[in-house]
Image (cartoon, rainbow, N blue to C red):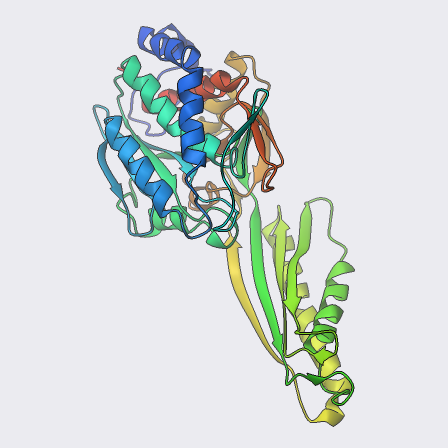
Amino acid sequence: MSASIISIADHHPHDSIAELLRNQQVQRAFDFIDSSASRFTSEHIRICEIPAPPFKEQERGRYLASRFAELGLSDVHTDSEGNVIGFYRGQSDAPLLVLSAHMDTVFPDDTDVTVRRVGSCLCAPGIADDTAGLAALTGLVQAMNAAPITLRGTIALIATVGEEGEGNLRGVRHLFSEGRLVGRVSAFISFDGSGVNYITNQALGSRRYRVTLEGPGGHSWGDFGVVNPVHALGRAIARMAAYRAPVDPRTTYNIGRIEGGESVNVIPQMASMDVDLRSASETELAKLEEFLLAAINRALEDENALRASSGQKLKSEVKLIGNRPSGETPRAAAIVRAAIEASRTLGINPVLNRASTDSNIPISLGIPAVTIGVGGVSGDSHRLTEWYDPAGRELGYKRALLLALAIVGVV
C-alpha cells in the first residue's frame, strides 16, 4: 500500500508525511515548537492551576475560551454541555478534523492544584492528565499561526468536559449527538496525557454501577436478626471476587468504593458500592455484567431468607452510572496509518493499544478516531503526587501537527 496518506474525504487532496516535512510552512512551525519550551511550560502551568473538578470545569473553560479567541480561532463558543470549541479554518470545511483534550480532573473541589517545580518536573494533581493535552491544543495553534500554515480543510479545537469517571464521556457524547458538529466530523484525534509511543485505536468498553442496599437498621444487640445491608453487600462482593475473568480477551472488574453504616454497634440502614466492569470484548463484558447483577440478586435473597423471622426485607437500587462503548478504528484506516507513519518518520516506534478515552464515542459511531499522547514523561496519574517532565515534548507536538496536517491538507 502506498505510504501516502489517503484523505478521510476521498475527494479531498492529501499530503504524505514526506511531502509535509519538505513544506516550508511546516518547517517554520517546527522551528517555533523547538524554540518555545518556556512559553509552552508557562501555559501548561497556568491551565493546571485553574481547578477543574468533576462537573465543575467552568472556570477552566472560560480561560480556554479566552485563549482560543486571543489566538485567532473563529467562532469560539462554549456549547450547552460546557465544551469549549474554536475553529482554525482552511479553504473548506471538509474534511473537518477535531483535535480534543479534556478539561476535567478526578480531584475534588478542595484539592491544591498549585504547580511545584522539582528539578525538571512539574508536580501537581492533573498536571499530565489532561493538562498536557490542553496545553498542546494552544501550543499547536501558536505553531500554525507562527508559520503561518494555510489549511485545505478545517480543524475544530475542542476542550471537552466529563471525560473522567462519572462524567461518562458526557462532553464528547454531546458533540456527536446534539452539538453543532453532528454529522460534520470527518476524523477525531484526542490528546490525552504524555508520551508518544502509544496510538489508541481500540476503544475499551466499560459498565459502571452504583449498588445501594437499604434496610430498617437498628441496635447491634437489641435488634440482632434484622436484615443487614452490609452483610448482603459483602456476599455480593465475595461472589464478584471469585469471578474467573478471561485473560484473552482481557476482562477486568473492580469494587472501587464501598460505604455505609453509622457506628460499630449500629446495624446500618444503608450500604453501597461502586463497581467498574471492563472488557476488550462486548460479549465478555455482557457476561460479566450479567454475573454482577445475578450476584446482587442472590446476595439479597440469601440475606432476606436468613433474616426472614425479622419480618423485614432489604430494598435495592442498581444504577448504571457509566456506559462506555467499545469498538476499533482498523489499522488499515487512513488516520491510523497516518499516525504510524508520522511516528516512524520522527523516530518513534508506535504501538497500537486499547484504552477508554474520548475517542470511544466517535469510534463506536464509525468515525475514524485515535487518541495519542503529546510528548514528555509523566507518572502518578490520578494521584496527588502526579508529575510531568516536559523533556521530549517537542517530539509529541511535531507528531501531532504532522498527523493533523496529513488529514486536512496544507495549501
